[in-house]
Structure formats: structure tokens, C-alpha cells
Length: 283
Image (cartoon, rainbow, N blue to C red):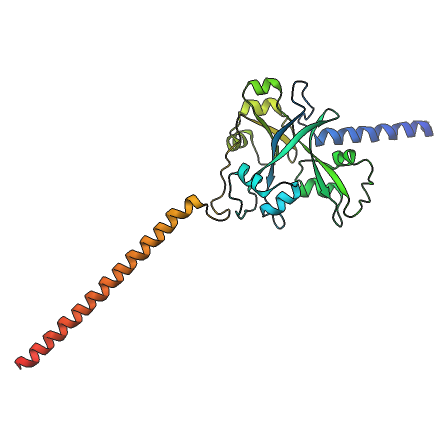
């Protein structure tokens, strides 16, 4: 006869607590694979950059993106190698300057955000800030607010993942650790080439196991000059002059050709008319 063992209520409570803590630990590990702790030999704060992807419908203008990060459009345009009045294209990569600092041994760039209607932390972190932070970090950064009932117009902190270079990295010439959210179809070769980074430095700095939609760090010796789409907005002043000259020369050539054609047709007509008159007189 089989004996069925039934755990006591205290044992059930203990097992439930262990499962809960294990789930929280797994979530935390899943949401932050790259090490964003503050290096012992790094400065307390630094100026660095995070990447942002232009997206429809609300974030295809520098104004809206700069308002989200509470900085000027000019600072984004300078870092991103585009004109301030450029029209952005979907999936265009931008560099956004931020100030990175240590908070309880973790490196964050704290951005102030005003709660809108129907906002919640997962929406803010995953959609607006494109996984540069996550809802767990936002809950920790705003302990006085109920995450399930966010007051309208309340100011919350969005802690974006970042990191300042260590002394050893600075000695190697690494000036910035750019925060970039890894995409499912990314690979180290393509990303390192896009940002002018060393593949070895990227592999040393990050854990790429299941890194999709998670922030990583791209060590660079200089701010990369991103290759931007040629259709991304108005033509710069340096490119306008050749265009204007080309249009002017083309128009002038067309006018000359048209004038010569009209003169030729007129002369041919007059020649025929004179010939007809001469034949009539002879007859």
C-alpha cells in the first residue's frame, strides 16, 4: 500500500518562498547580464553615451527624443553626425550623451521622466527607453511610488545602464563605454565595425549569452562617426553648394541649347522663305 506524504503548512510556505526568491533572482540575472557595477578605480562620474533607435510614430524627431532625455537636440545631432534639423528615418541609430554615476555600487545615468496617462514601468523601460533600463531597476529607484498605481505627472527616475571606464581601460586609450541594446540579429563583427570598437574589448566587457534586448557596453577609444542614411533630413550646408551649382549650370545649359535651337529654326525658315521668293521672281 502506497503512503502519500503531505508536507506541513510551514514546509509549503518555505517552498513557496524559495521558489519566489529563485524567480526574482533569475529575473534579475536575465535582465542584467553585462556587469554594470562601479569599478573600484573608475571616476565617481563621467560623461558617456547611450544609443537610441529612431522609431515611429513619436520618436522620428530630435525634439521628441531630446525631450525624453531632457537634453538639447544639438547635443544629440553633434554626437550622431547629423544636422540639428534632420528628419530621422525608422531604425536610425543615434548617440545620446548622458552623465553616468554610481548608485549603491551600480552605474546608472538617472533620467527624470514625467508619468503620462496609462504609463507603467514595463512600458516606460521597454518601449520609451528601449531596454536601456528595466522595470525592476525603476521600482528600486522610486521606492516611494506604488508601481501598480503611478500618479499622473509624477516625476520618476529612469536609471539607464552605463559605466565609466576603469583606470586600466583609460590607460589603454578607451575613453567611452557606450551602452547599446543588443538585437537578435546582431553579431560582434558588425557592431564592432559600426562603432569602431575592438572585438576583443567587446568580448571581454560583455556576456553575449542570450543577450538579445539587453544592454551591453561597447568600449571605444574615440566617439564613433556613425554612417547615417543619406535621406535622413535636410542637406547640410556643405552639400547644398554643389547641388545649387549643378542646378544652375544645368539650367544655363538648357537655356543656351533652347536659344540656339530657336535661332537655327528661325534661320532655316528664313532660308526657305528667301528661296521661295527667289523662285517666284525667276518664274
